[in-house]
Length: 493
Image (cartoon, rainbow, N blue to C red):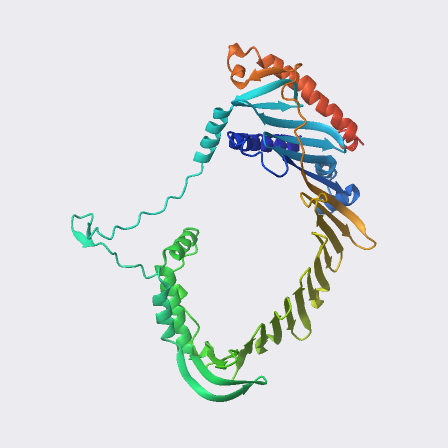
């Protein structure tokens, strides 16, 4: 029931936006293209699998029964939303049986609202009333007005004390990155450029630049970053929030670093070639006395390819990376320790994309494939873990031969042999019309103002229609279309 109420509320909001926005546009919209769209969704879930999943999470009979009521109802629901030039309609079927409908149609200066919950009435709402409601809702979200730009002819601005100050205020040290770059560059020693013939990783280069950061340089760079952070308004706001929560972060604490002898020394060398345009960057991080190597690696830029290698001796780890774009994109990553840790690959072509990742130590792997076929897409995602196997497949194809619309079909299977968990069909269908009757002679057309005037004489009739005819018929339809719900009611075995 809560699901249906939520759908009613969502449709009511959509009615306000669509019908109010359609005013004055009905004639202008009579161009080519579909006269309307129908968006529908159908999910089919495996109830036994869901029940086992709920029970594994919370082995309680009462809670499992309550949770399964929602699952059964969700499994039976088939919502559909139809949008045309002059209105919108929400329909909810239960296992193929119509259970509930709510819609609004734009008329002469008003919007007519009809629903199966009020089978004997049509409610009309003036269009200007809906526009006023939409404006009220929009006013709840304050707009961000841009700050006024300073007047270049203003000259000097008066200070609060009555004195004059320069119109151009002193810039905040934290608002500009350039001063930070200048301060950081002071702690980086540069050698070069050096011209010659340099053979590195099997390639030849003719220009070399070397950059060196000493342990003292790292300390200087860190202190400069801390000063910049505490002077930056945005970062300072975050620090203030953390301090209000008891973090007690100060610049002095942030600048506290290990002794200089424990800080690394970094050497970065950039090799380049003036003709080919290729370049290669090597880096080595060592202890201050250069006896221990913390890490070393290189990255090579050659045309459409980028390759890299990284080694971290303290963790006994090594990684290779490659990115190539000769024909499509090919990406590969391999991480190794004392045993293989991770392997990932990705490739794409004109009509397909593929990806693969393996985690040997976790005994897990995953892969995906996406292919473009006959104007549509088809794909597969497969995940293997230590305990379970998940296989998801989907396809998206045009609704009809004209190429308009969309049908999206997805399914998920668990373990082997395949055990279906759920299937979903989403349809975006053109050229559909509203099916509710907004002007039936057997219905009472009632302006919304009449609900609060006429001394409330219309309220009893509406409540009777809602409870007996509307909700009563909905409960009967639900019981017939979803008999599983009866078995989950309290007191049932």
